[in-house]
Image (cartoon, rainbow, N blue to C red):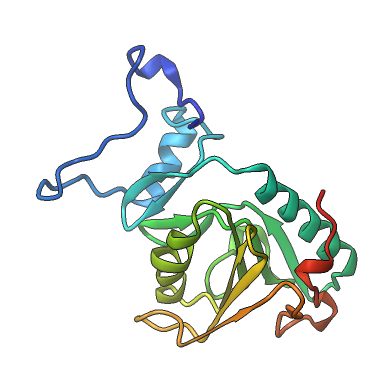
Length: 203
């Protein structure tokens, strides 16, 4: 289920999504325009979607296993974290004038404020996938890479495999490897956050 928008602008029963024919142009939105509509109350602040090259794309609902492992990872990492970086879950990550994503977990430079969050201040984006694995590993990974996000982890909660991406370029990440649940995941900037998914408790 998609969360409801501000319903006083919409007739009863109006769908929240549309599928335009591929050969029809669509109106390209910018991050600034979306921000202005949220501020004006046209778009509900809690509505969950991502802006991808100007297209507003609703986000899928998250399953119990997804939320369980996200909570477990956050708990582990928050306890182990040092002060040289910061961790934020599900933030609106503005990548450019017409693109923002909402990573499950984002690490960024500890000297930066939320207001300064950008690909240049980011360290690692973590996507936790149950039903969205192909999208997260495909188009979404390409978006992160093209905007210069240094590293991306896509965690498949069904298998506890993690797809580790590094070295972003305009054509995607240049390096990718897959680690199993009993192998150690360790961010390059924070060895104290090393973790094995197979040893994490499910919350």
